[in-house]
Length: 244
Image (tube, rainbow, N blue to C red; front, side, top):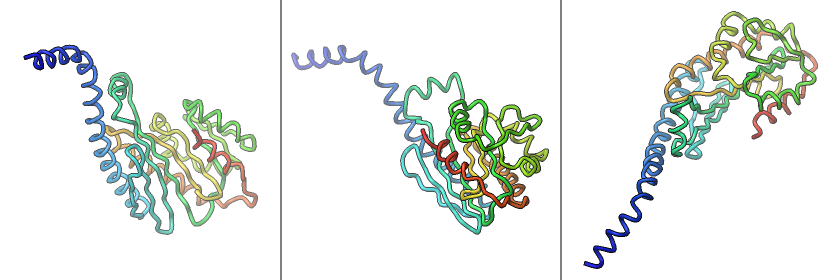
């Protein structure tokens, strides 16, 4: 009887702690399952879209619960990384009530010939990225593109860069501004780098739209004859934007 009384006493004593721990345990279990499911969704969506647009079959590899890589090559090379928000944390579900939480994707394209200019398109809302970019962009000139005030656009060849911004590209950049962090066009490999965000609610729409936009920008940039003198500052800029 004494043992039973002790167990009951311990249970009552520990009950408040158990009540507090249960939500965190459930969040961890649910989040771990969700992360596995989301990797499957993103693998399929990226694979289908890249295959359709670039005729490349990618290999998507999960290198950790919150990170995956993908790559493929068929004349044009594709390399990328996926960064997931940690759904195992209880705070994730609390914050999600008040705002959208996105996952990040970096995609790099390697082309067989250089584009006609170097160019940076970066969201003005990404303050930290913007500060890093401005520190390396002294050799670039700013372009004012109508209807794209949300982005800072800089290039080493204004006349060439202006030819890239047709009606479709301007419209899609404006419509996708919440999810686009930056786009870099460079003479050296990777010739295009883009960082964008997606989530498990809108990924099926966002991935095809953003990658279609990416292909249009690449195609337009490659139609322009490259400058004889190549700008080296973009190499440092790409490293700076990736640094945490």
